[in-house]
Length: 236
Image (tube, rainbow, N blue to C red; front, side, top):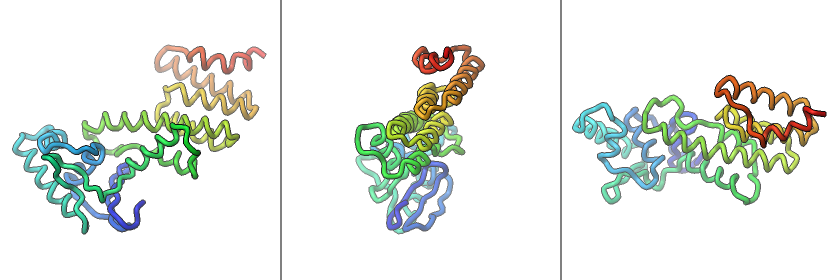
């Protein structure tokens, strides 16, 4: 968290702070800042009003937006919202945890140096995007965040496995399975970690648990790629 500037948290729960001190905001202003944070290029006023208050008349939605904008601009000693080319956007002074997390996720997916603190990164990527908010416009944004963090967690788990950091690799892969229990990749990585550790029984157990899950939920089988991982183990 930034200790000297404006910091906006969207992962886990909404919080706006300045120099480490929390800034209370009404719901409308919170939702406006969150919308602008996930649309870095900005949002036109009319589109913002329609997305944030879809059940209101255009006039009422516009009035709500003006109120939210007023509260948002006055939050703390620095302006948090600015208008550029008829678009509302988050002021550059506002640091957003989602942006930082996305940047670290992309680093984890790439071939760059390993993260300084894999456990902290895994915990950060385990956080949901405003999970308690019912807003419809967040559905797609949550899906985007989930895909980014899943790929990052899986890449990080594979890197940790190759480096022999088995406990951290297991915890990272398990975090990915909690995000999407049906997705095969993280389960396959878990099996690979168990095999690398020499824990044959754990590898077979994980495979059978995932197989039962797929049969129960989707009536399908694990992929041949996953099955081949344990074929030699189960036939021995």
